[in-house]
Each structure stands twice: as structure tokens, then as C-alpha cells.
Length: 88
Image (cartoon, rainbow, N blue to C red; front, side):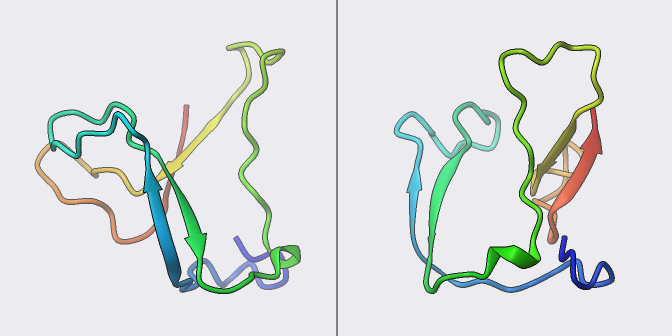
């Protein structure tokens, strides 16, 4: 989310390289290790953006958390076109 302009939710960034998890299979029925490191083509001024906060070891399961990603909308759909968010 762009903190300077909350109405702007989508920005295009081009990437130079993607390094997938070594155990990711890419099979549609298996999302284990579905994570990657993306190297962008040019630097990004991150002062305009708020990063997603990752949970630490000290945080319990009583807190509300958010999950973000481009996952499937349902079992029969393709990946979402925009980054999605869910409370868990």
C-alpha cells in the first residue's frame, strides 16, 4: 500500500531474476515451498510503502494476523491478478 497515496493500491515493478525455493515442484496440487526471492530491475524508494510485518517467535496465536499473496481464489481458479489479503 502506498502510504503517500492510499488510493493507489497497484504499482508495476519489473524484475531481473527470480530464485525459487530449491524444493518447490510447481505442481498445481502441491503448494509446499511455494516461495521465491525476487530481484527487481531497479531500486525502489521504499519510503512510500509499508512492508508486511512477519510474525516473530514471541507472538502467540491469540493475535490477528494477515496473509498476503497471489494465491488461488478457489480450488478451480487461476492465480489472482492483484495481491490479495486475508485475516487469519
